[in-house]
Each structure stands twice: as C-alpha cells, then as structure tokens.
Amino acid sequence: MAAPGKKWRRKSESEAKSTENDGVVEEADGPSEQSQVAFPPSFSVSEIKNKQRRHFMFLRWKQQQRKEKLAIKKKRRKEREALGDKAPPKPVPKTIENQRVYDETTVDPNDEEVALDEATDEFASYFSRQTVPKILITTSDRPRGRTVRFCEQLSTCIPNSHVYYRRGLALKRIIPQCIARDFTDLIVINEDCKIPNGLVLSHLPEGPTAHFRMSSVRLRKEIKRKGKAPSEHQPEIILNNFTTRLGHSIGRMFASLFPHDPQFVGRQVATFHNQRDYIFFRFHRYIFKNEKKVAIQELGPRFTLKLRSLQKGTFDSKFGEYEWIHKRREMDTSRRKFHL
Image (cartoon, rainbow, N blue to C red; front, side, top):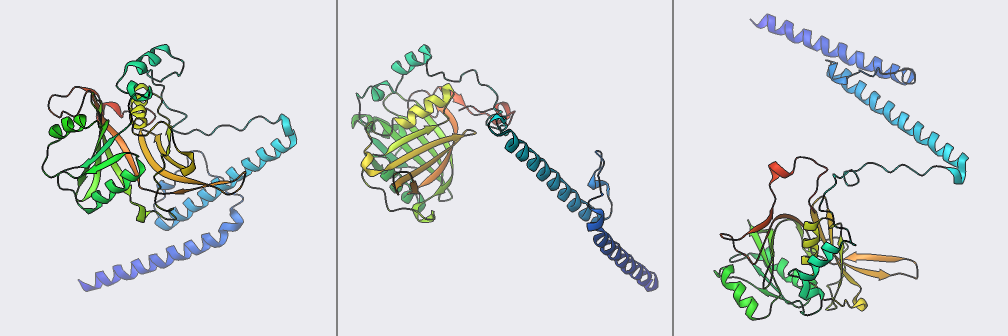
C-alpha cells in the first residue's frame, strides 16, 4: 500500500515542477507577446483550469484593459487640444445619484400647493418666528458611558438644548412635562450593547415623530485633526438633497432644532447631508486663511442616520398613526430609487 502512495507523491511533485516551468516560460515570453495578444470578445478567464495559468492570464487581461483605456484618454485629450474652444463638453459620468429613478413627490420650490402646506404644517410657528427652539435631549433607560458622552457633545452643537438622563421614566410621561415647560423638540438616543444605535426626534406639541437608525458614531476624541471645542455661538445650518415631500418634511424637522439668526462670528456650521437616503451629520468650523482661501476643521461629533418611520403626532408606539414606514422588501427593489 505504501508503494502506490510514493508513486503518486512523486508524480504530483513532477507535475508541480512542470507547471512551475510552464509558468516561467510563459512569464519569459510574456513581455514579447504582450503587444501581440488580443483576447476574443467571448474570452473568459474562468474557463482556464490551471490556477497559475488562470491568474497569469487574468493579470495580462487587466493590463491590456488599462492600456486600452489610457490610449482612449490620450486620444480624447489630443482631440480637445486640437479643437480648443470648439471642443464639446466633457461627458458626465454615470452615477447612482444622476441615474436616480424619478419620484413623483419631488418638491418644486415654486409650487403653490407646497407653499400652502408649509404655511399650515406643524413647523409653521417656527418658520414664522413665533417660537424659539428649546430642545430636550434624553436617552434610553439607564444609559452607559459612551451614550452619555455622545449626548453631552450633541448638546454643544444644538443651542438651547438640555440633557436629561432617564431612570425608569416612560416617554409618554416625559412628553407632557416637556410641553408644560415649553420645550419645542424631544430627542431620544437609544443604545444597544453600550453603543448608540437609534434616534427618535419628536416635534412638540403636535408632532410629527421620526425614528432613525443611527450608525458610524464618532466622538470628538476619535476624530483625527479635530478643532477645539465648539463655542456658544449659534451655528449656521446646511440641508443638502432633501428633494421629495418626505425629505422636505425631514429637512424642516432638522431646521427647527436651530435658531433662526446664526452668529457668523463663531464660524460654526452644522450640516445634514442626504445621500442615497443616508443622512450624514457633520459639525465644522471654517477658518479664513486669506481673502481667497478658506479651510474647515471638524469639531465633532459625527454620525449617520437612516429613516425608519415617520409618525403623526407625538411618540405613541401602540396607537400612533404612521405617515411613512420603511419596508425593505417592498421599497428597496431598485438601487436607483430613493425616498428622501
């Protein structure tokens, strides 16, 4: 029984040497044949059985693709230089954003119906300057250290905000107390395994209430090249890409957290950037280097939000009426369809 095993082992070693020799020969002949090789349109590297040969042919195919792409770029550059001012505009690259499926609820700034709805919705008192934002930031029951630090840092970004840590008190009992003390918004930070993973934003006294999934939370000490702690100046606010009716409502909800008149002396700006239905929050300070150059430094914290649901009225998990609920299997049928 041992002899056949030895024969088989010797045979495999000889085959390995032969395949290595074949690889060396191919590599030696590669540079000379590289300019002459032309892969057919139906060529598939996966059809090659030998692993070394398959890997070598794949590298050669990739190199050929890069050379062809570089040659096309050089040709186009020479044509543009020859035409000068008469050169056609550069083609816009295709991205998921500019190939987005059209949404019927996209907001037109000149739409009279949208203007009428904004004049009578829950945020009309804020945008008509009848109320001043006053925010209560609270947590889930008995928060841990990371969530506590996150709430403290978030309160420095939102002016006139107060932090309260819950100890067994239900949200339905907190909301009437907030309304009685003239709070305009309630922010609840939820956590799981000592990590913040959810945010509930409820506009008072009549709603609506939005529930977000939170991810990619970074505190100030975890951000590289961060600036000094934020000052007490009222920041500017930037809202990007909230184009649909649902996104417009979410954008107005974020805008109502900040006062109307920012103090430009502080040079601080809070950004809510919507990209593919993910809302990125950043807090920066911009620095004027000279008359033409401006630099920004991040102050933190940073986090990402994903809308789960929008509920009418204040928070009510049992009997609340929902305006919108994210259902993955039914709504996420295309990568190019977005809701905000």
